[in-house]
Image 1 (cartoon, one colour):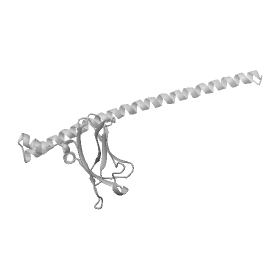
Image 2: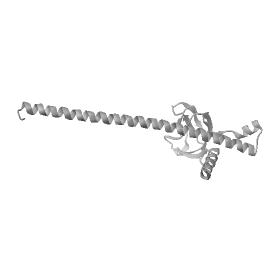
Image 3: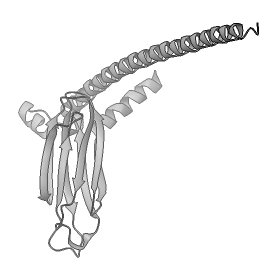
Image 4: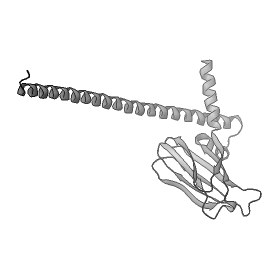
Amino acid sequence: MGGMSRWIFLMVLCLLHKGQAIWLTVPPIGTKCVSEELHNNVVVLADYYALPDDHTHPSPTISVKVTSPFGNTLHHKENTTHGQFAFTTTEAGNYLACFWVEDGHNPGGKSLNVGLDWKTGIAAKDWESVARKEKIEGIELELRKLEGAVEAIHENLIYLKTREAEMRAVSEITNTRVASFSLASLGVCVLAAVLQILYLKRYFQKKKLI
């Protein structure tokens, strides 16, 4: 029980601080993308910004496009030095954010560094607004954060359970199809062997060899 309690505590801490501050190197030609698999009804908040070189004037600009698993555009901006996007997921799957440099907007033609601060779920919630609205602070606010983290863990477990059931169903269907195909192949082989034997028998009888 002690190990399970520690595991749950670590999960809560991870969810409270779940955010990805990453650096991307966008090539002068081509696209750099990052993705994250999310389930339904998850809040996503992200800030991105081009990191200028000390010797680059004017500041470089980037273009960005964020799409859902079904290809719907959630955010699209071109030739900007920084920006932000926020949305609540309505589809389960991989959400993709792609960055690129438009022709003529990269002085020197070098790779461009981009900073991306990607937050999801409980980490994307504006707790300062919650505290002002509900007039809570200190320990009470931390308890609210823990409560939200526990709810997020519960939702993640339900999502994982659902995905596991879906994958099990797909696996069972695949196994059934493979077994059916194997039986059909075996039947075809047996039928071909029988027809070949009958053909050879008639051939030898016709030649009066048997």
